[in-house]
Length: 77
Image 1 (tube, rainbow, N blue to C red):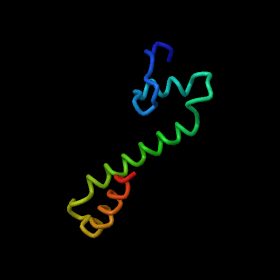
Image 2 (cartoon, helix red, strand yellow):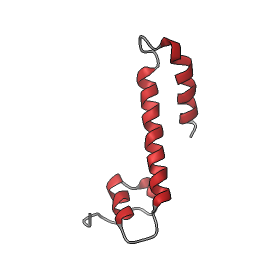
Image 3 (cartoon, rainbow, N blue to C red):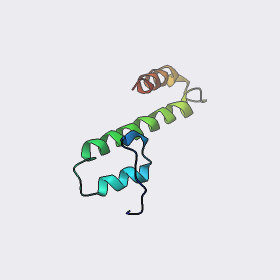
């Protein structure tokens, strides 16, 4: 993990490989909080993906409104 180019200052603009490289480095930041935030963002994105694939799908009509509300709430994050 040591052949990575210089990374942008803001974590949000870094490629995943650069972020992981910095997590593995002997430095206090980024640390567990940044890793947790990244994991949460990925989880939220996957939840939206599930909603996108399920809303309007045959057999799931009973939960369309609930999933639409969930998707709207997660999108707002």
